[in-house]
Amino acid sequence: MDIILIIIAIILYLIGIAGCILPALAGTPFCYLALLLAHWSGYVTVSTPTLIIWGVITLILTILDIFLTPWMTRRFGGGKGGEWGAIIGLLVGMFLPWPWGPMAGPFVGALVGEIIVSRQSTSGAMKAAFGSFLSFFVSIGIKLLACGGILASALMTLL
Image (cartoon, rainbow, N blue to C red; front, side):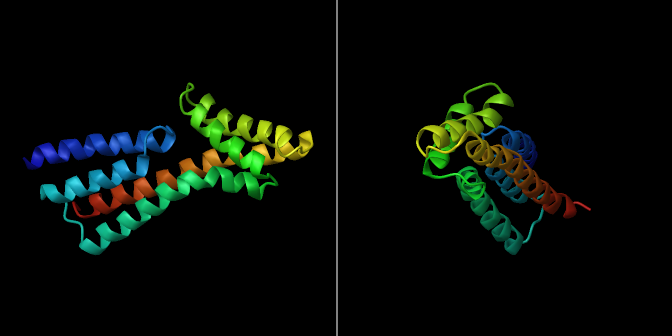
């Protein structure tokens, strides 16, 4: 049974890494679930505080991932139109081919939202849209770091 748990944990970890890049998959929760399964297998012994800390980090990153795009759009000068446009673009972009859909969706959504709803100039709308575009890369980086840390926590117990 322990071998099966480890195999499933490895598969979940690989799905988690893919989920860091593909917005339709929740990358960090898959990696955390892989850590739990590896811990329950008996081959990996992670302390309870470590499991709790990674659980809290996973929860925070999952929530942060939802709000990062509209927040960065706002930080780059966008208004409510840009925020909602970025959110709608993110949802639509998830169903378009990777990487263009997830990258361009929030950008185009924020741009259109700023021009139509917020009545901002093209240069101001481009600046806000760039914030949503940048959030795509920031989000990937943060999630990959967390998944790497989760894997490191599991591998350190094997050494």
